[in-house]
Structure formats: C-alpha cells, structure tokens
Amino acid sequence: MHRIAHTLWNLKVPILPRLVSHTSRFLTGIEIHPGAVIGEGLFIDHGMGVVIGETSIIGNDVSIYQGVTLGGTSQLKVKRHPTIKDNVVVGAGAKLIGNIEIGEGAKIGAGSVVITSVPDHATVVGVPGHIVTIRNPDTDTIEHLPDPEWELMQSMQKRMAELEARLTYLEARLQDEETAPVVSRSTGHVLRSVEGSPEENR
Image (cartoon, rainbow, N blue to C red; front, side, top):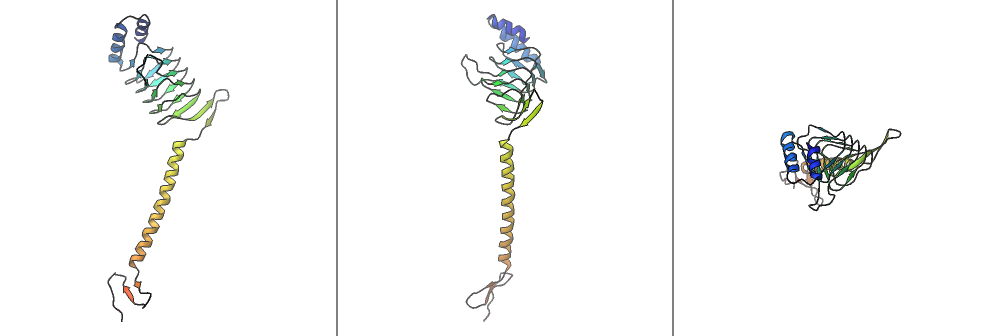
C-alpha cells in the first residue's frame, strides 16, 4: 500500500496518497508518510505504533520493531527525518529524530533516543543514544567503547556505599557517647549516669 501511495505522491496526485496512507494505518497500525523512500526487503515486526516521517529514507534489508519513530524536528519542507542505510536493525520503541544518518549494519537498542548520526556497524543504546560497540566487518571483531552512563552509575553506587558506612560509624559513636557517663573535668564528679539521670556526688 505504501508503494502505491508513494507512486501517487511522486505524481503529485492530490488527496489520494494520503487516503491510501491513512487506510494502511487503519489496517496495520503502521503510519508511513507517502513521501518516505523505502528500499527493498524492509521488515517491520509487530509494527503497531511504527511512524515513518515524510523525508525518511530507508535502505535495503532493514528491520524495524514495534513502536519505532523516524521523526522530524522542523515543519520546513527540507530533509528533516532520518536516513537509514542497508542492514540496520532498530529495536522496539527507539526514537530516531532529525536529519541524521544511521550507518550500514548499525544496531539501535530498544528504547534508545538517537539525535546524532551513527557510524557503520555501531551499536547504540541509551537516552540520549551513545555508541557502546563498533563491529569490524572484515574481521568480525567487536570493539567495546567506554559507557559513560554505566561508569557514572558505578561511581554513584560506590559513593553511596562509602557514605552509608560513614553514617553507620557516626551513629554508633553518637550512641556510645549518649550512654557513657559524663564526668566533670574540674571536680571529677559524675554529672550524668549511664541512664542519663543527674547525680550529686559531694
């Protein structure tokens, strides 16, 4: 149905391309603007909620899962939606926003929000999306890149553990001081007993 709508759109037929597009959305739950350019072998798995914007360009053998959005950031009649090259996998719920390019063989993790271009054979996760691995297609080896979000979480967990240990130590010291008898430095008399009641020693 999109192929029909896209052909009519290119022929500048009024109204009809939109009608075909909306009919397709009603039947499938997948919204594809008639102006989107889609290559061969696009696979949309469990496509409910998928949205593909007007100036999106999708290459060959791309896989898209449910809830994915290829969105724009402008109302101007310019290229404002993503370009996805061949053999890309876009995980469920991912949002690709703006005139960005997703390189060949890249993988976009589920729930990621991608607002910058992604190189070939990279894996992107997170909000905002960041590259965690890059695969070398010649040797099929994977280079793991630093994950700043994970490092920050690890640092915060370590700091929390240190603060909890200090708090436990200070609470124990405070409790010991509260239960210890208070002795006057000048007279040597006990001013407070263990129970905390004043005592008069003369």
